[in-house]
Length: 183
Image (cartoon, rainbow, N blue to C red):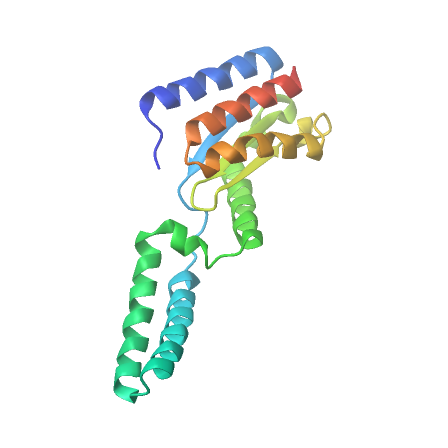
C-alpha cells in the first residue's frame, strides 16, 4: 500500500521537525513485503489439499472425485495466497515475520548509509505492510539514549493503526512518540 502525497509530505515534515528539535536524523520507510516467502503457496497447497482429501473421503469415498477435489482445492488455496495477503499471512508465523522485517531494516539501514550521520545518530522506522510489523532501529551513537522498552512502547502505539490498515497515521504516531522520547 503506497502512501498518498499529502501523507508523505506530512510524515516528512514531522521527521524534519523531529530532526531540528533533537538533532537525530529519522527515516521512515514503508515496505510492501520484507521477504518473498516462497513457501507460502506450497504450505497452503499442502494444508488445503490434505483437508479437502480428508473431507472428500469422509463424504464420498470415490477415489477420482477425492483426487480432483484434493488437487483443485490445493491449487485454489495456493492461488489465493498470491492475491489475498491476509490469507497468505496465515502461513507465516509471527516470529518469522518479525525476523524478516528486522533483517530487512538492518539491510535498509546500511544500503541507505544511515550509519554515516554525524555522531551516528540516525533512527530508522520501518513498517512491513504484509508482515504488519514495525521495527525501530537506532544507530550506535543514539542507542545508549533510548531503552529497548521505550522503543517497544512506541511500536505498541503504532500497531493498532497499522492493524487497521492506517499506515500514515501509524507513522505519524510513531514519529510523535519518538520526538517526545528524544526531546
